[in-house]
Image 1 (cartoon, rainbow, N blue to C red):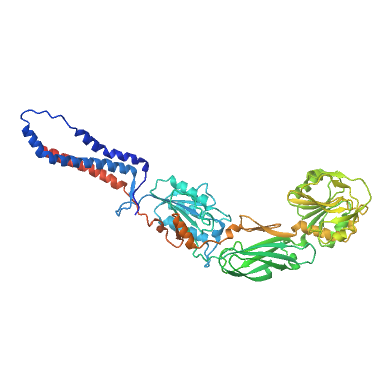
Image 2: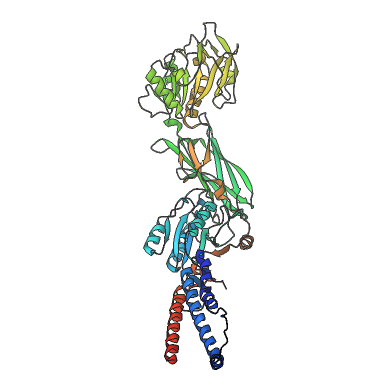
Length: 610
């Protein structure tokens, strides 16, 4: 049974005032000097005969006066005690923290989402508990969704505004905020209630913050037998025509239960690869799925292809990490700007031979790649540099050393004196555009007209001539990149336009500039999305359900004074061990009773004395 508590304990020192009647009584009974004279013996005998009654009367009055002051002071202190009396319950304040992190969007085997269960339990608590309730969410701890109130419509309205997130959240901050809010409440009974799946911190590590108020946890998991497999993948796109691609799939069982399922790859809802998989607890597996070349042409009306890779299992509780979508442009719908001055006809013929639509002028940004001479117009140079900086890829033909484009991209160049054409001696075939083209490119001769003065940290030589002069240089510009040929596509200065490597190089560049060579997913705290060159996947921390057993968690939390209940249990169980009653009105009644008794007894003794 809980001891008495006080709503305003700061007034406890005032209880010393209850001793005032006793002090006054003792001071009034000071020993007087006795003077003996005749005729006092009779008075002494009378006093001795009435001394017992007088002592009883004074004691009774002393108790009544002391009781009146004591109960008046207790009224000021607002006492609460677990007494079996028909008194109003003690004021109660409860701060409810709702976990709206991504893992709460898991579901039981009956299809019930954990976050929906949390809201349902919270609504029952709001309706059933006789308390002032404040609502907080894990993603917004700076201020509560609803401050302490008994207004039911207001609380329900605030509850309906809470939404799940795709974030990885730490509940420790929200629990501290709830504790701070409760410390400013004058309630006798205070509780912090966290509705969670105990997948996030601080419950995973059990490193709970120091709290001034009791903490209770509502576990929304109906069973500790939870299973989850996380899927991740990389899509390798071929840069040559009529070549199959591939999908590298990574599966990781982030639970303590074995799981069986299948991995299916599809395009426009049509499966093209399927594999059955069995995963033991905490097991990781890599799969390689073929992607036929016809998939690259299965585009929609916008010319984009969307490939989905999905993990299917009836016992997987968390669906947001079970799929990935990759979006890229169909090779037949690629648009390339051809703004080459010398050699325009060669580039145009190469693009048309590969069924790639060439655009003579970049009047709008509805294109995927640029093959252009270094622009001499300052406005055009700035527009091209800005486009590359925002993620575009361009081949720049260095036929104009005085172009303002070089200063726009921060390249320091110098003009090379005329000399005889030199043969390409070295090619970096680790670059996907040049892979397998080294032998053909080594038959190319060129007479460069410029070279770079300094070696930029973001630049890389991809091909060089016999004297070491760069012939093809790659450098980054913002989020994009440029491939620079140091010799114009003029047959008098280079024979690359006649090389068997020219058409494959143009085709590979167009495809590489459009969608790259490999598409992979990045973690983001948002709903999984797929767009050109960008695929997102949910945070891995929210997929990890390798948790200790529920029995161990409950035992360890119990040692820390934390109570754990299930979402199936009634919210009233939170206050079942606390039945404090408000004694303020009782104390006030006892004050009046003591004063009334003193008045009546004084009047009665006065009448008898007459």
